[in-house]
Each structure stands twice: as C-alpha cells, then as structure tokens.
Image (tube, rainbow, N blue to C red):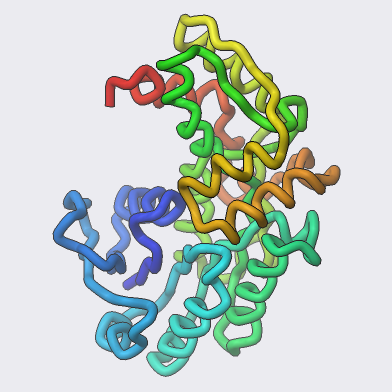
Length: 284
C-alpha cells in the first residue's frame, strides 16, 4: 500500500493517476475526499497535516509514502508525516523538492525545499528526493490572457528553463515508490524536460498549436510578483519571483533521470500543449 500526501495537487494528481495505471494500491490523502472523482485502485481518505493524530490510522499497512507538500509549509508538514511514517514502520519515503535547491539554496525557495529534504533524509527511513524543474502546467495561468487580449504578459520572456510535464514527475515517482532498491542508485533525482525553452518560445508553440496569434509583452519582476500574489500567499510570490530574477544556468540544464527511470524521454512542451489544447482554448 502507498500513501500519497498532497494527492490532489498538480504533482500528487499525476502520481496517483500513474500509480493507478500501474495497478498499485493507493491511499490518497485529501482534506475533502468526497469532492474527488473516483480513480481505479485508489482510496481517497480524509486527513489533516496540521492534526497529526489523523495520520496514524491512514498509515496502517502502508509500505511507502509519497509527499508533495507546498514549499513554504514543507519542512513543518513533512516532519509531521515522516514522524507518523516512522512510527508505522514505513519502508520508504519519496518526497518532492525543487531544483531551486541546486540553483539557489540560500534563497527562500531553495531554503524551504532543502529543509524539507532534510526532514526525510535524516529520518532514518530510506528516502528518495525528487528535484524537478518548473512545470509546464504553470502556463495554464496564461489562458485568460490568450482568450481575452491575445497577449501574454511575462517577466524575463527570454529566460530559458528546462521545465517539464507533471506527468513525467508522476511516472518517476511511481517507479521510485515501487522499486526494490534506490532508483539510479541515488537518493536525489533531478528532473527536467527534454530542452530549455523560454516563455517567448512557449508562446510561439501555443500560437502554432492553437492556431491563433498570441503576442508577448514584457513586464517587470515586480509586476509579475504582484500578479502572482493574487493567486498564492505573498511569501510564496516573493520567493518564486526572486528565484526567477536570480536564475542561473541550472534552470536551463537538461538532466537524464526521467529517461533513466522511465525508459522514455521526457514529454516536450509541444506535446503537452497538444494534449491540453482544449483547455488552452477554454473548452474544458
């Protein structure tokens, strides 16, 4: 049995679906299991990471735990999960971190995830850390602009980054959770897409696949921070935009751990857009 913590988030959802596809028995933790659509071989259960006692019964019979918590809460919430997992004699923990740990460990984003990593690695439970780059799905935030003005406003439009499809993170996670030994012989797996693509290049892909003109307008980092703060806590908006402003070469580096673990190359942004074309066009 595998317990997935953060089961309804972007990475958690991808992981649950991949585990289901592989026929694994999954217990998926969410605050509101009644609001989730059924998934084969998956039991959605209620739990609260701020109420540790709710986790104990959910860990009965669990061999592996997957943790996908938010960066600014990661160390505290992961400590709760890992303590309960240790008490339940869980045999493996796989935790989602961020490539920001490599890029800028002294920044807020890298620091949050590094602290979360330490919780798992120092727990005594065999642990695997996934450090993905950013997600293609972040460009869903452009949909209102694409459908409205036909202009995507973004800071640093020519900054290349080897972002990836969350489905690739799910595929890697499913194998890491199921493997008898540490995948690739390493406790840290760095995940990227197949090539570095800038926001301007992403917009060009969108325009081609959607069959409509889309322009790019550059805005300042401060403007981007203000807009992001409307959707996420201000501390998160500060950390994310500060990381982009201080971006180094790691952000554009291609890693091969996705292909090593899954046997297939990571999904391209072009395929991601084709697969989600209806959503980008406002049809879903």
